[in-house]
Amino acid sequence: MTDEQALVKTLDFQLDIQSDNESLLYDATLEARSVYNETIRLAKQGVDWNAIPDHVADDANLVKNTTQRVVAKALGAMENYYEYDDFGQPSHTKDGPYPLRANYEEGYNLSLTDDGDVAFRISAKPYNHVKGVLKGSNAHLDILKTALESDEWKIGTAEALFHGGSAELHVNVTNTEQTVRDKQDSRTVIGVDVNEDNVSLTALSEDGVEGTLVIDFPEIKFERHRYFTMRKRVQNARKDSIHDTLEGREERFVRDRLHKVSRHIVEWSQQFEKPCIVFEDLKEMHDSIDYGTRMNRRLHHLPFRALQFYTSYKASFDGVPTAWINPEYTSQRCPMCGHTERANRNKKRFKCRSCSHQDHSDRGASVNIAVKGIKKHQDWNVPALNSLPVVRKVSTERRSLS
Image 1: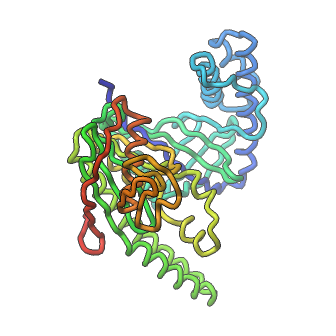
Image 2 (image 1 turned 180 degrees about the vertical axis):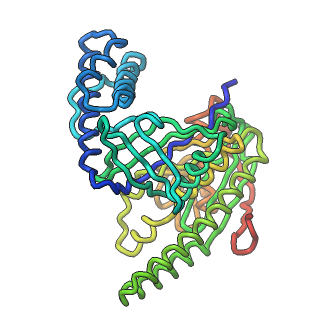
């Protein structure tokens, strides 16, 4: 039996720097890189690890606790190298910027403004601060605002970094009242396949498929296309204010539907014994999409990750863990015989070229996601699948998921 885990979230934000000194923050990340490199160099030379923080801090042009946090991260990399066979020895010649790691209310601070924004102050160098407001997803901002006002939350370390040339802040927050069961201590794995117009769910236990559900949400696709057409027209007419208004309406509509769908996913999952919800890791998918201008626009802006985040967040507050697997071949593999071929799938219809098994293609993908989740995260065997239950569908157009 594994232990329950604290409810910890890493919230990602862009920095809207309003103190006219963004270069100061970049210089600080270069200084953090020097601290990291020097820590690794000294550790390789056999210097006592307990003596390294003070040694490095004497020469670093950073706030002392920030230097200590960067040193601790570097020594953690060395510890992983010595403890685990699959970790390579860290380099002491890193180039480019390195994340500036800081303690809350020491190396950085956050506060709510009268306008409802979250203001930040980062101590980039001793007695030199970078100030501004955080920008990011409404979901992450909502959690952070709650954490700033609630005793149930603790704001922890953060990292200021540059990603693609843009300044970001990644903040760790912990809910001290909530715990999440370890994903390895699960008896049912829920495979979740997120698509352009639906989400497919399959619950898989040692006894086989416990249930399947396809939630259709065609109105999201329809409304996104409708708003895109309207925005294009007002953009051509150079009516920027109307364009921004339409964009805000679309965002609120989509967010509302995704919250309802994610809530239904969590509620459906809870009927099964000790569930663990498993998603495809789609972080790299958007970078590889290239299907022509029109299709690229549709796919690159689909709220895959948003639905995954909303579901994971809601599941966490009910103690249900979530996990991610490699999405490779989940839509092409036959869940019955394992034969994998692109020609198995034709839009929403799946027919295996080897065993002739036929199914709803998205449901089949959710079965494969659940199978991968068991193989990666559980210590029990994947059951042999001889048949699958009839697909049950619900639609956000026909019923309320609230």
